[in-house]
Image (cartoon, rainbow over the protein chains, first blue to last red):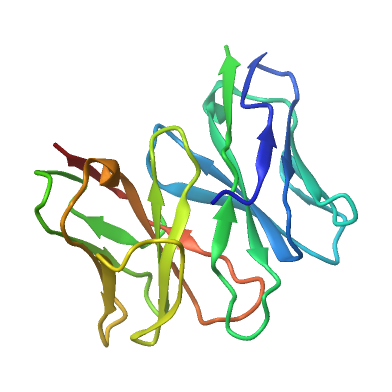
Length: 115
Length: 114
């Protein structure tokens, strides 16, 4: 079953604009991660934000996490045509013991950046 | 490139057949997780192997089975294939069972069941 809901399902913007994707989840988490996928191939890890963090930056990426609302957002600034891909959030649930690394993914947002 | 390699890249099988997919993890990584991604969906967790032992399983029937070898490479076996098993199968390797560890994904195996 899918843990999260991602919003929007698809996003179409022009180069240079910012893209914002949202993710909601249901259970207590250790961390939330964002991945990128090109053309149905492998997933590329973008950023990990821990449950005790509220905001994290990596290059043109900015991720926020609100554990009280069980939601996260990914902002890509100054987008490029090469950013065209599917973006997924994934949660690592806080199940204790040796339960780390079993990721639950959302449905994804398809981002299209037009040159 | 993540250093995680999967083979084959594409595969076509007939309903009822059996299939074995392979994953070579990144050097030094002792944990491998397998995911199934249906078209238009996010990946779903199948199971995880840590030091050759299964360490957790998702909501998949027993005909999905796995194996991890002493060099930490891994296999996913699916028996009695069904049409709904058509999907992209992804493996991810990571270092240990530590909290907040990044997983590195392979490029996947695209399985088509006809």
